[in-house]
View 1: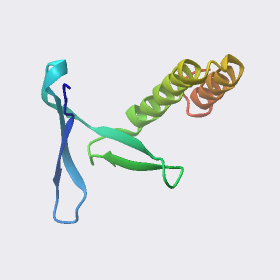
View 2 (view 1 turned 180 degrees about the vertical axis):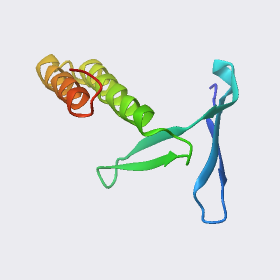
View 3 (view 1 turned 90 degrees about the horizontal axis):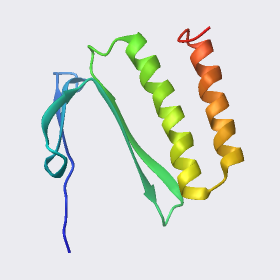
Length: 108
């Protein structure tokens, strides 16, 4: 059985605030690529809850964070549709993503 790793390296300042974030996925050809934000979510089957790590650096611009969230909502809709085949619910998630874009000032 083949195994693969995705690694996240976090450099913290003296107050434990992320200064730098890098991630690697050697099988995907990514080695220590810098990013300004990441959200990692895993499913705890026993507790039936999502566990999260949300990190962003001091240098992450607010406008980029808004775009990041909008894109996550849109891709969550696609993932939900693939995972459940519930296209009607996925459509509602997409509608929310578009409403978010308007409210966040990304679209008119």
